Length: 144
Image 1: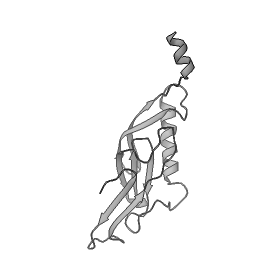
Image 2: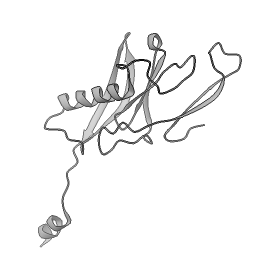
Image 3: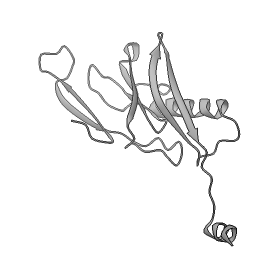
Image 4: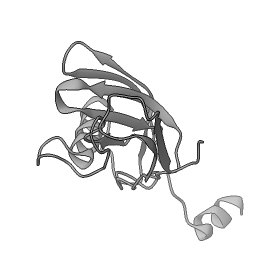
């Protein structure tokens, strides 16, 4: 079952995990930019065995960490560093460092794909959209 904004997991009763059946966990917005939404499509997955965590990247540029995957999956972090918010902020900071100009919260970054590389590294492809705004009065005055 796939629904936007929901991570659904299933394991059989005969698995060697600490849980069985189904789990449905709603995603939360990381609020990185005006384009942030937990309803965006998944753009990458990576299981980190030594943390027993699943990194889920969304197209909106956010990363979500599902902790304790083999015992009792939840969004609750097992520590203060390896969290969804910290990873999302790190990816946003990388976009800010690599893209020209000053990136603001109205500028949207997108992650088109995320893959594991080695033991503790992930690579991602990103793009960003510079959002230009105009007022209605400026648009009318330029038509005159």
